[in-house]
Every structure is written in structure tokens, then in C-alpha cells.
Length: 445
Image 1 (cartoon, rainbow, N blue to C red):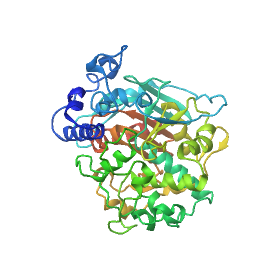
Image 2 (image 1 turned 135 degrees about the vertical axis):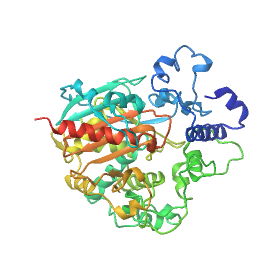
Image 3 (image 1 turned 180 degrees about the vertical axis):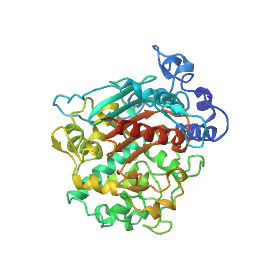
Image 4 (image 1 turned 90 degrees about the vertical axis):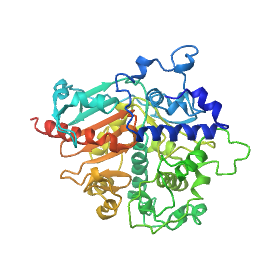
């Protein structure tokens, strides 16, 4: 890992330093250089940010991007609130609803063969292989497995990364099901400011299913990709004096131009969720953090508040800024497994869950070339397996997951800090591990 002080000395502005750190991290991940394993990179053992002040070589900062270089990022993902501006997602004032627990330690011995491998691996070994920070498994409404690693504790919070998209997608689909948003209307009818952008002619449904045609690259290894302009606009850091670009998520979204046609091909692009967040805010008068609290979080009997990171004007990052406690995210997943019902309430419409489980356009998804996800589709910002039983998944970089398997009566929620952002790096272990656990639990009387 580079010395963050050296990085900040070499780069003239905080924004350039942040960009350089991210590009450097992604480029390193693309090489064959091995990373320290989970034990060697354990943030608690390495002592990141311990002391008053911490030692210089164990200090991370948001402003120079050092907070997201591996292995320091293994500490950061459980401590974003210490590093950047956030907005709260209140759990409300009611008492938490306890989760029943019947722990099954024998789960650790379940074995499976990772994709492309010959040797088997145990469920316990898979936690280290995926750099898991915390994992909860619920079966038939009870916690049957719960583990924490590194600096994440049961009372801590962790970055959900792009799992955020599925949570915000659920909010959007909820408003569609309740008639507050017409999914067939064009985005510009709800947000006229986007009329001249690529999103203006897209329907809300195309945004929800990410079949928009956008001139927007999310290739993190390319410093000229539009994802970096998006990051610059959303970053709350001071801009350099000569900076003339967008200064908020809202401003950036208006600059995205059309490429191709809407509705033809699935294209996973974070900006779609930011647009959905804007539509939600315009329709309800509440930003996604406020609406999530009011419609879902305060009704789950959650143990903790959640929070979103925000841009310079306080707009929640709808595409990836949610941070939650692990057990509360398990409550959210269990609610969806139970057709939208939890804590004695119908929190989201059953029709919404049914629609997600049916999946999206398989042909549009296939064009995107996800070799490890053949036969899958994408609906309302959820990844749908299209397997018998209707399992679906929320996925975030570095290994974040919500996996809902109605047939197995199982929910898996995992927080992780894998050194490689792309899910293709951990899917060879994750996918067969989740399948093996589902099969094992399904055999229980």
C-alpha cells in the first residue's frame, strides 16, 4: 500500500488525489499481485485508527483517498460516518423487535466446490476467502448463523455499497405498486430538469431495470470514465479553484447524454439509481433517507439507525451510500422473503415482491455478458436468479450481499471487504456456497 502522505504530496488537489487512489487500487486489483489474506489484513489486528492520534502509518483520511486503499479500506467500510458527511435513517422511537435465534454451528462444516476449482471448501473457509466482515443467515424466520470479523461488531454499521440500489429500488417499486409513480411515464415528466439529458426520454421502468442507453462508463480502471466525473460531482470535498464541473449529484445527472436506445440492453450504471432517487424525492417531497425511515426502517423493529453518505448539498447517495447494522439488513431481507410482511405489518406490497421474483428481461440481461450469471435477469434493481423457487439477490462491490431464497426459506446477509471491487472475484466462492447452504437447510425437517 502506498504511503498516503506521499500520495497527497504528489497530487495537487484533493479531488485528483482521491481519483488517483481509486484508479491505483483498481489497477492493482487487476494485476496478479497477491493481496494479504483475510487474517493478514484483519483491520483490528493491524490497528488502523487506534490511538490519540493514531500512528501516521495507521491513519486514513477521506480527503486524500487513502481511506479506500487496501487493506485500510477494511477498517473504513465499517466507519464511514467518521470520515464523511452523512444523513440519518431513523429507526423510530419504538422498541426493537428481537430476532429469534437457533444457532447451528454445524453449518461451518458444509462443503462445496468453488466455480472453476477442483478442491472443495467449507462454509467456514468461505468466510475468509471472501474477506467477510459479518454474516447472518436466517432460516424459517430464525437466526441460524451469525459471525463477525475484523472491526465490525453486532452494534456497528457497515457500508452496503450497491446493495443500496436494491433498497432504493424497493422504495421506487413500492411507489409504483401504490400508484404514486407511473412506471411507463418518462422521467422528464417527474423531473423536468432531466429533459435534455439521456434520462429525459427513458421511462421510470427502464431506469428501474437499468435498460437505459447512456453515454456513461463505469470502468473504474479508466481514469477518463464518466464514473469519475460522477464521483467528483458527488464528493463533498472542496473543489479546486479552476473546477467548472457539476457540484452535486443533481447537477451531474443533467449532463449524461444518450448512447444507443433505451430498453434494448441491460447496463449496470449507478447513475440510474441516483435518477430514481431524484424521482422519488420529487414525487414524495422526501429524500431517500427520509422515505426509507418512514416507509420501511421505522416499521422493521430495527435495532439501529442506518445512514447515507451525502454530497455537498446533502443529497443522499442513492446509488451506493447506505450503511446499516447487519442484523437490521437481515430484517429487511426477511421482510421480502415473507412477501413484504414483517413485525406484524404489510410493509411493502406483496405484488412488488412477486414482480421482483418473476424477474426482468432475460434477453436484455444476456447481452451484458455476465458469464457467471447466465440465465439471470434484473428487475427493480434486484438481481434475479430465475431459478425454481424465485431466489433473488442484492449485490455490492467488495462482496456485499442480500440473498433471499423463498424455496429454501432462507435469507443470507453478508458484509465484506474483498480487495477486488468486482463481484466476479468472489462469485466463484459465493454462489456455490449460498447454493450449498440452501440445499442443506432445505433438508431440515
